[in-house]
Length: 561
Image 1 (cartoon, rainbow, N blue to C red):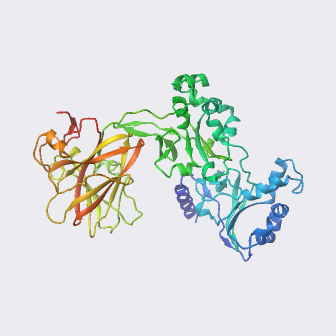
Image 2: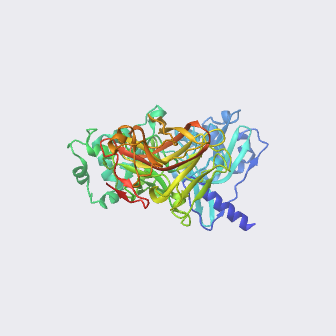
Image 3: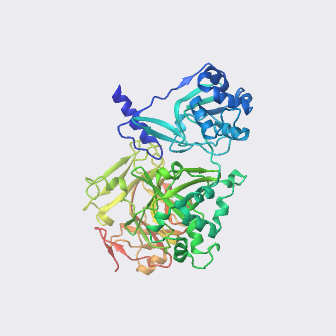
C-alpha cells in the first residue's frame, strides 16, 4: 500500500505544469465526495461546526441567497479556525465587527462562477477568475512529510472536490486575501527593487503598471523585475548607472530611447503566471517585435537560454519563491540576473534537420546507425520539436545514417531525416520547430537527397509560421546544369562539397522573420503518392549575403570555395 501511495505522489509531482520536485514525500489524501445536499449553503449548514463563521459572512454580505440557488460555482470554504485567524489579523473581534465592504470583496474572492476541480490545479493560475476579478493560483506545498494543494500561498486544501447541487466545494484552512495594490505599488514597497522602480518612473511605465483598467481585456500585465542585487552583479549600482548604460537619447520617456526599450522588454501583455509562461516557447514583450524565449530546465523556468552559432547562451532564472506575485492589475516575477534584449543583425542559419535532441541523446545511434521514431497516437510526441499527422504506429519517421549508403554518404554529417508523407496512407503534414532565427529578411533553401521512382512525393508546399512560400519543393527533381551564378538565378544551388546531383538545394522563397525566436517550418505534400523523402538541411540566409557558400563536407565542416 505504501509503495502505491509513493508512486502516486511522484506521478502527481511530475504532472504539475511548472514541475515541483517532491522527494520522498507522502501525499495527503484528497477526498472526492458527492453529498446529498442540494447546494453549497446546505453543505455548510450540515457541517456548521466547521463553517459557522464563514456562514455568518455569507449572511452578512447577503451572498447566501444566490449560493442557495441553482448554478455552477466553485467555493473555497475556510474553516472556523481560518476565519478566526483572519479576524484577529484585521483587528475585528467578530464577523459583525468586520468592515462590510472588505467582507464582500473577501466572499467574491472565494467564489468562481464555474466548477473547477483539482484536475485544473496546476502550478499557476486557475482557468477562470474569481467573482472579485483576480485570479487564484494553486500549487503544491510540502509541510514536513505532507504534500497538499496550496491556494494563493495563503491556504492549504484540507478536503477537495465536494460535489453539491450547484457546484464544488474545496475546504481550506485559511482565508484567502485578494491583492489590494497594483504591480507598481507592490514593487515600490519593496526596497530591493528601488533601481528598477525608478526606471519604471522615468520611462513612464510606472503609470501604466499603477492603473487598473476597467476593461479586463486591457487590464492585465506581467512584469519580470530585477532586484538591486541582480543589477549590482552586472555593475549597475544606481539608477544613474543604469541610465548611463542604456539611455542613448538622454530622455528615457522617449519610446525610442534604449532605457525605455530595456524596461519595455521586461513587460508582457496579459496575466502570465509561471505555469502560463512555460506553456509557450516565447512571449512578446512591450519592446516592439522582441520576445523572451522560455524553457523548463531541471524544473526551473529559464528565459533567453538560446543557441546562436552553435554556442549556448546561458539564460536567466525566474526565482520561484519570489515570483507569481498577484496584483490588482497583473502579476510580477523576479529574475535572478540582469538581462536585456540583444541587438543582433540577421545571421545565416544552416539548420541540420537531423540533429535534434532526441537522437543526440541516443549515443549508440547518433552518427552511428539509423533509428526510427514511432508515433503511437495523435497526441504522442516522440520528438519534441518535430510533429506529424498520425496515421498508424507503423508509419515511422527515421533518423538515417550511413557513411557508405547512397542516401547519406555525401550528406552533411552523413545523416538525413527520412519522412514518410503523402496520400493516401502517410502523413499529410510534417512540422518542425527551427532553431532561433534573428529577425530579418531571408532566402529559404531546402536541402535534400533526390528520390525518384514510383510512390514518391513530387511536390510539397513549404510553410513558415503558416505563410506558404512562393515556390513548392519537388523532392524528385534534380539540380539542372550550370554555373553557381546560373543556378542561383534559377533558385538552385549545390550545398555539399561533392558534385553529386543526387544532393541538391532548392530556394523556396523569401520570408520576413519578424521576431527573434524559434519559428515553425512545415511541409505539406501537394502531389505524388505516399513515400519517403530525405531532408538534410534547411538554410535561412539573409537576402544580401552570399547564398552559395559555405558548402558542407560529410563530416559537417564548412568550406568556402
